[in-house]
Image (cartoon, rainbow, N blue to C red; front, top):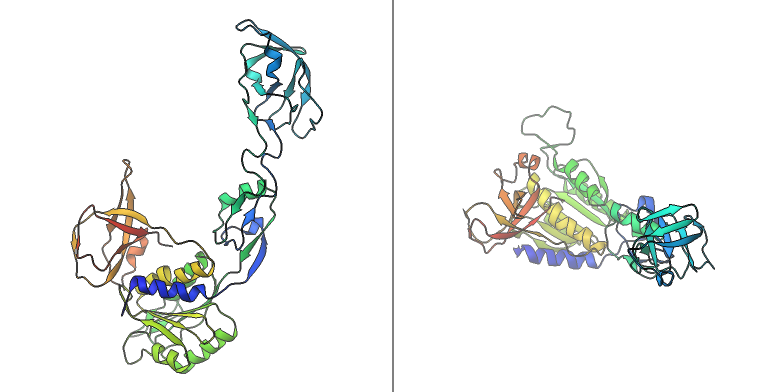
Length: 406
């Protein structure tokens, strides 16, 4: 049995050896995908000096004779609107009326807002000396040509679209979605949620959850009907998965030590390399990781629904992260709200609820119903709290790592 962190190290190493293809997508379709190459700006922003306000472009040399608070008057040399060309124009003995976003004469030192002057026909009265550079947007002030806007492995969100579009970037090279096959085992499992359960039967909650979760984290997911406890069918499914080029295969159930837990021995029989079987964690101790003959990672997750959910969140998600060269996930550090005494030796991953106080304190509550068959806490939880295996006494106010549910 290995530690939780050793399991993560083995998962990362296996996933690092795998590479996903890449493809271009339009900017409109890029949200939710992962960037596969650095994206650099090809232009400066702003691409030219322009006015930040409606007002008058002035040259401070034209204020040398000003004697404020006495009014100082300049003649309007012309009007410049956004989209016009100001090349060759200068401020010389007068001022230019400019609109927000408009270019202005190259020797202008400041923009004086229209609200701060008095306009009389073609003359403008100024009541104070402008500050050099005021209300001017300088070329490249936001970002310069060559600036990195996206890094390899960066998850693209709606917030990225604005600067990318500003830079005139219409397409982005992204990783192809990892192809994941999910399958359930167990003779008692019923896929049809509209059916009536017979004696000893339970609905397959893992399958719809796995599909929803994996799609949420950016995978291309395929599910199949539950295999029951049939090793021969299992072998056929794995052969097909490998020939179809799946990047990851995930199963739930049949990985413990029961009479019908066939996954471990069947994987060995087909030549898979089992990297670990059993992890010092709760829930999900009988976790399994193998390298299929194709090289694809195989995750054998325990069948209890919460153990499957934890395996998807922290093991399968880790593999998908590494395959797409995403940075290490950063936890939230939060204070526990209770005192707790527990047995040592297992890394606990607990259903929890984060709270944020007005004073800026971040705390987490360990929810009732931590057993791996209890799914009702999923209706209210918003996080997973991690308690390392060496912690026996947990004290109120003690800081632990907490992760979001997805």
